[in-house]
Image (cartoon, rainbow, N blue to C red; front, side, top):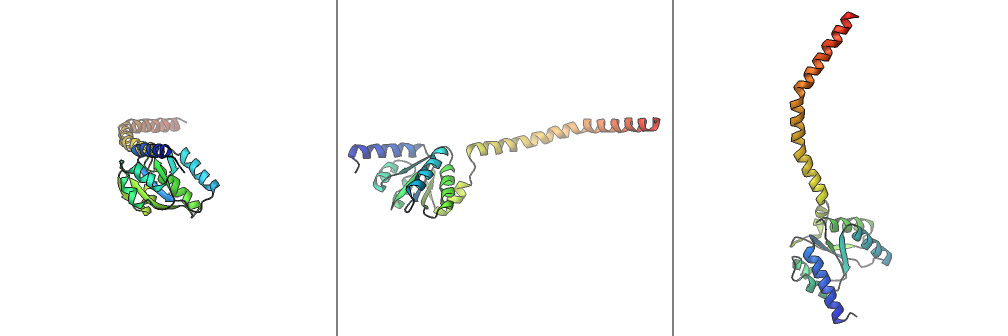
Length: 176
């Protein structure tokens, strides 16, 4: 049993993480072994996902003043909470990939920026690009027209060089 001070600390910690998170997922972990749960937590930590098993009453209290308060009614049963701290899709990717390995992890609630999504939306959320991926795509989109412009501007000079080279080759062939 947790003391009142420990409960307050848990609520404060989870609330602090939830305020900074982009997305949250609650998944039922019933049937997972300790080693599977440890592997899930290790994977989550490496991807910038805060993961915690919290009693539902404490979780409701922690989430009540955050944008994830929409999850409160669905918090029932043994749940692990996962918060995406770096990218909106990171928790979804960790949960999706782990759920592919075992059917014991079942997604119950998905929330993104204060909106409650269905568990079926987990796949769509997991496919969202990370911040770095989105920036690289944006850079590519911005760079493509500039490259095309440069190639177009350089083409008359390149064409002239090819014509002169062909004339030179013809003259050399005629002299031989």
